[in-house]
Length: 429
Length: 185
Image (cartoon, rainbow over all chains, first blue to last red; front, side):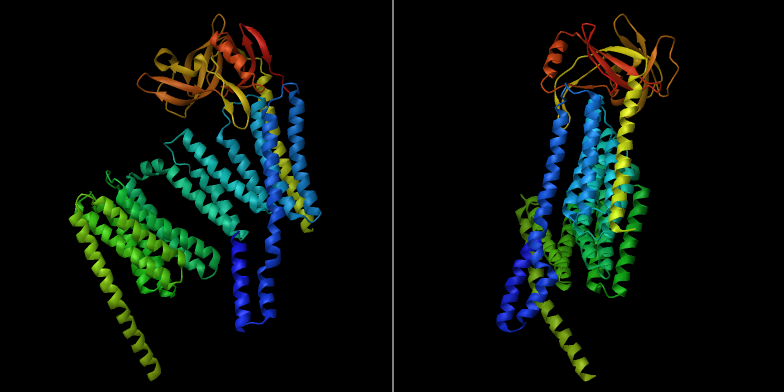
């Protein structure tokens, strides 16, 4: 869909540029050919239809056997299940050989769906009540093997979804433990998304990891010996590290670097904001302190590395370190004293303004919008938080407003002076 | 080796792996059903529906909730533990007499069944266990018949037990008479 929107916009722009005489019609056609405009509108339709058809066939197979038709002996049911599986995979080979990769992909989905269905239906045939999460893991690993060996992006997506399903199920069975085994197949799948250069897959991998964290939060808190606020601070530090890594990766792989950068910044700011809402009723343990210090040092060191290689400005370096300091300090200082709350709110607001500047400076639209959203969210939070003490609220907003307005007047002047002096120095040489 | 043949070989390997996994699943159940160790357990079914696997009857047994103070064996249990329960025959059914962390040698005539503790009521010291035999899948719409039998408390289940304690439903009895018999294949 986004490809179509982009192409529609590009075609409009190209027509306009031709009218202005900036490019020739031949150049415009060359640009369209390069983007695959002709193919893009039609290429995905049969693939989408075939994939949807395969999903429906998978559900049909499950429902059919689920009807548990008693008239057919077990051996016939089992033969049908195995035959359906082999047929689906045979169809994949047939379609591939005939040069229909879209249909081959659909058959792969059908094959994987039937494998999962067969597990459930064999469990039904033999009245297995407690189909353990292990079966979901096996299903996931087969999908991962298919994704790697064929290769198949859809199989990879199925594998990631099944992996997180397996993990959630395992945690539900015993909530006191952290489901570390998830990380192994997840890491393999994430590595494969990078190997296949699949941007959507990387999104999915990161999202599944984001699901895994809260699912295991109780176990992680018990392991580290900390409260919700302390854990949030640690994950905020981790998100800041991912953000900086994203900046580094952007230098060599813009697409994947941007994804990491965007996830890092959104999660970091989301968690920094969330810190204000959480109770910090448990004293942070020694392990927490060590982890926090390591995280803080990692943020400072990694950000300095990017500063030294000119991928980050001094302002951005200071913003990242300030965010890390705020995340680390807040759980320690905040015993919900009014002053700490307001001081943190002021720091957070300053950070949102920095994020807007970061987005503007790096031409990163998501950062710009995220900064504005975070700023608005914080204003609303403070308004509701201080409801009943409207004089305090008014004073806080008035002071903040005056500082911002003053900044909007003074900063451009400083910038103009700096640019002018730099130009003078340049012309003097 | 061409790309096409690599694709074919990859699919062949994938199909083989899947077939082996599913076959192992079938054979492990068949092996339990072949066991000569069979116990009969009293049950109280209800009639829900599994989204992907159709109608089934939920079976709850006397041994599904064990008052730990009333039986012998190991103490100190926690949720998620595997428990080996020693069963002894009564007039019509079997009842639990001991619970162990490891597979134990039962007294003559007794059997050992393996379960997992799903919930531990610490105030009353009652362990709730799952044996993997809590669902009996029936043809669509036929669950109600068994549910009616539940109301009359007439339903019992024949359970085959493997040497490692794993259990599988072998048949259903109503008023002591077999009404469903599970073939191996």
